[in-house]
Image (tube, rainbow, N blue to C red):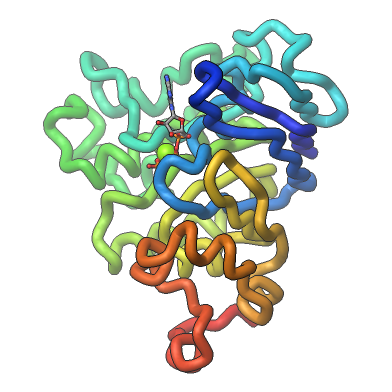
Length: 261
Ligand SMILES: Nc1ncnc2c1ncn2[C@@H]1O[C@H](COP(=O)(O)OP(=O)(O)OP(=O)(O)O)[C@@H](O)[C@H]1O
Ligand SMILES: [Mg+2]
């Protein structure tokens, strides 16, 4: 269980990135954060693993405040897929996936995660394993980033637009594989996306954020779909959300390809 209690991040008196966000993600649950660019999604993820120190508030993982823990130890239990992939540039792909920084001996002993997970995200280790990150496309690098985060088998995963740079067909396939994996592994996941359909497909719950991380709605995809967020939020995101396919008008909802069950 991940619990955010009124967490805030301020970069000075006139620059509030996140203001008093509270959110709960249950064990084995996948929560998706959606919202306009700059509303604090990445900041929120990075506060959970303390790459950014919150200005105030509490973050509990299984009841323990991460702010009281040694950040290096604490991060062993948290996989993180960053927005641009974030691979080690001078390590080959296989090493990037297998050598998860801070991965404990026990986690390594559970098997060589590199190959298995690379296959799961659709990268053949035989052809990709010995390459360096700059020898891959942006989308391939992102997939390696997903494989690396899963490689340490952490109970908690933070994923920042992990499929943002892949084409729609590959993205659909990766989403399906990822869902299968999640059914099996039951991680607690906070997942950021700009793609509303991706949010509806993958999320157990969708957190709709507006500027400075204000939580406008936090509900199952079906309930979000039946009852879209308030007008104040719609005008704050406006066209971006419209382009992303948020089905708030009746006509738009009628044509939405995959309404959540
Ligand atoms: N180091 C920093 N110093 C000052 N302001 C920052 C810093 N990092 C982020 N911000 C500001 O905090 C706000 C939230 O940024 P964040 O990266 O969390 O947005 P986001 O929701 O992830 O956006 P996107 O969808 O574009 O990735 C933005 O207004 C950003 O300009
Ligand atoms: Mg971001």
